[in-house]
Image 1 (cartoon, rainbow, N blue to C red):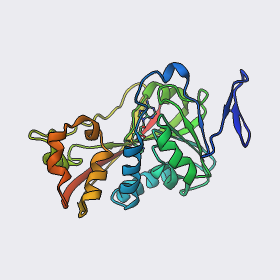
Image 2: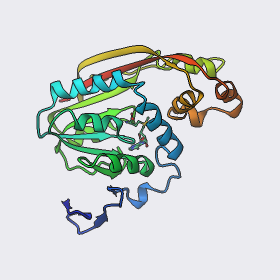
Image 3: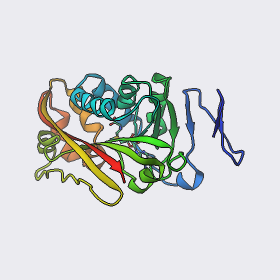
Length: 256
Ligand SMILES: C[S@@+](CC[C@H](N)C(=O)[O-])C[C@H]1O[C@@H](n2cnc3c(N)ncnc32)[C@H](O)[C@@H]1O
């Protein structure tokens, strides 16, 4: 695509304007018939407020270490499902990379594009990415849908997929406060004909939330927010203190 200050133009002369906040909407009309487009305003604002307090700083550091040790200067990094850009921004500060953020939620990208002027942001689906074949050096995918075939299409041969996922005990105590019969996460590690597993780093610690707002923000940034009934959330709505385990995996894969 040809990029100017105001728009992106594709080879078929379709022109996509850059919004005043600085992102471009590349979601095709046939992809936008569904009602829910990723995270809504409440989820986005809750996640931003929660992450800004540093509760997931160790994960942020783990992702930055993975990028610094594996990605070369001037490489193209695409953060797929970037949300409001908490990790995208950290990666921008790790080196001289060409950073792109993709998310299906306009609300999320408004925040990301406003605060991170040195990256390019597009509203698009992870399953139909606006990159040509073999044009990306590293796909970053943090707590977001993994479109493995599409990631493989856009990655260069030998390119990297850096994924952050919740492991077994992630938010166990929060789940216990919500559900009578909570279940543990069942993480899946790939090692197949498309992606070769290079390494997995486990990060596990406890966070202590001492304000009701922090507890609610954490709840609203998870899928439990839209999956849990009013009755089950009552207990949480009144809590002013919660200590919960956070348990992350940072997985690095190489495209075969
Ligand atoms: C749990 S959030 C993670 C956001 C960010 N990576 C972070 O960890 O702060 C998942 C993100 O994936 C986005 N998302 C959901 N479905 C998507 C899709 N099909 N394509 C692109 N993004 C999607 C959501 O809008 C949301 O911003």
